[in-house]
Length: 417
Ligand code: EPU
Image (cartoon, protein in one colour):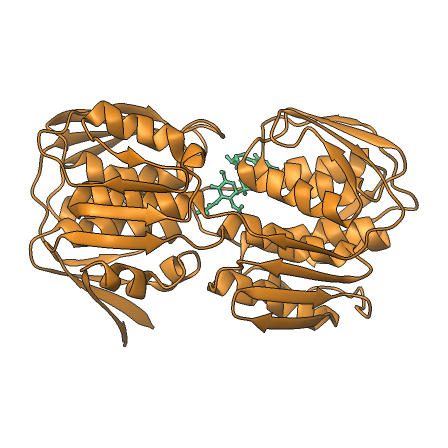
């Protein structure tokens, strides 16, 4: 078991370079199976979620090479066999294999995916899409057997703009006969990156990044090269670290537009930032104003930054209100923040953060990935030492977090216990 120790109260200066986006990379890797040729993906983050996907690729017989951040995948010799539950439950993104295998072989056997326990996270929208495209889905407990004699394009309206269901639809519809029109699609940058990757292989997808995506099925997808886009959630997390403890902290190799919902809120609180083409510089600021925030799909305020933002709101003078509309169980960080000295009340889907409160180091837990990020930010800010257990959740999604924070002045260490 791993844990992190952080001695709080040290200012952060210098530059943090942002890695490739977890939620883009975890879709691109399974999508690579759709190609009949070799595919190269650069800027792959070195995180445990990618290791888990690599395990699935190798289990199926793909030839995978990883050299630094470059991943070369050749799926020509894969065998389409049942993916065991112990592998699929390691992460949410394992279910992208459901759709890439269905798209390519018209048959897949797999189990319910895993992922952070932040809500029920059903996959009904993905299954509805498979059925609409002509597949039969047999559910036996956690197991899904999905078969199609033929996949045929059609018009599909999602009940909610689900990121996963949108990506899964792309992965199947690229190999369906005729045109698929996906309405109420999610608009996240990760979806645009998957569509661009597939188009580079020879797919015909237009409209990714808008709520209506049109996919014309093709018979063959070939070789291609792509680079993973910068991780907007990692960038937002470190920007919040700079808001809490920065002394000219620069977040670099990022796309500021992707987190404009956060930078607008930071401006509202009183921060002045230098926002360039691929960087943002920020410093800790006094007399912060409280704000109201509601999580929404892109380009709204991302649910994945809700928990990290909570730490900053404990430092605003007055009452901030944060409403979580995407997940029903994404406040598990709150009791731990309160243990550190915060004054936060949970009322159904909303938290009320009464600031400003001094934070003090203690022993806390990373209950999920972004809750862990919230605890890291709180520990950097707190007086004294904080120990964060269950840190494996954080290592699933933040590449080299220890080194990145150490390089800008944090006193942080990873321990094996
Ligand atoms: N939903 C359904 N049915 C479905 C699909 C979704 O009811 O079939 C609901 C979910 O329960 C949730 C909402 O719709 O309430 C949105 O879910 P979505 O499908 O958009 O989320 P996801 O694809 O499972 C991805 C990211 C999450 C991120 C969300 C929202 C990956 C691997 N995961 O999840 O990332 O929070 O989009 O942006 O891309 C994280 O990185 O910490 C993380 C949880």
